[in-house]
Length: 347
Image (cartoon, rainbow, N blue to C red):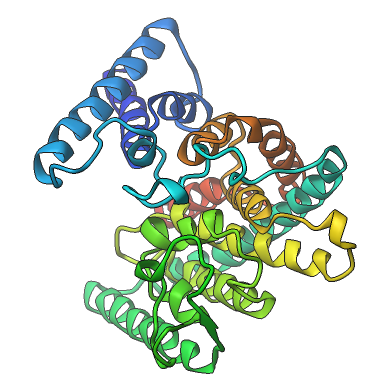
């Protein structure tokens, strides 16, 4: 029982630290990390998540520059914009944050269905790869060679693909040149694919897709290729003998495809009905992650907190609900891991 409590509490404070959201950490432990719950477990997870976030910021404020704002919306909401640049913040300027109309809830449901299908296909494909690895029963050396080979192929792919991408102009971009990669483009220009593929996914990639309000910043083909590239890499790499997570890559994949979906819809809509690409990047990220890991409440809290957009709660709830129902035709990624371990133990 004590080991179970420690495991569940660990789920709570690690999630809280990763997304700087104590409440989301508690909800994730409740929703995904345990098969039973109690009042004692509630306050233990709540306390551990609270202390973790406070301790984390106590450490960060000592190693960051003196100009950092500490407990501020720019630092607490990690996908909310660029720290120190108020104009990039999604919530400070009322005219700058993403928005949506009532009729777009139908599109949010459609995005959720798409996220559920993508998540289901991902879990099915990854399950087959996991069972194949189990059947091969690779030695330690072969597992190491697998990691090195797949890493080399993925790295080469990420570096080669941007050479086929088109260039864009820095002018009018919300986040400025520090977030955009020049790569093989001329001075004053940036490479679209290089910007999405060569930047850290969590630190810059998702932030770009969530906060860049220029619809022409990333083309439809760029968003689709970037999302597909990371989906294939994640599907193959998840299950290797190396510690790795899937939350941030899935958020990036969903945000890229959600943004592409809005750009495609805008081709057929009048000027008065144009969709905000940032809105669908946020909804798409929640739908794709929800379609894979089957979490609803904690995922809604995570996305709302990390973007500081509380009024996005109902669109995210709708998208994740539809995604979970669409993914119910398949199997959850958590069940894939459990099934594989069980098969390996008793085969």
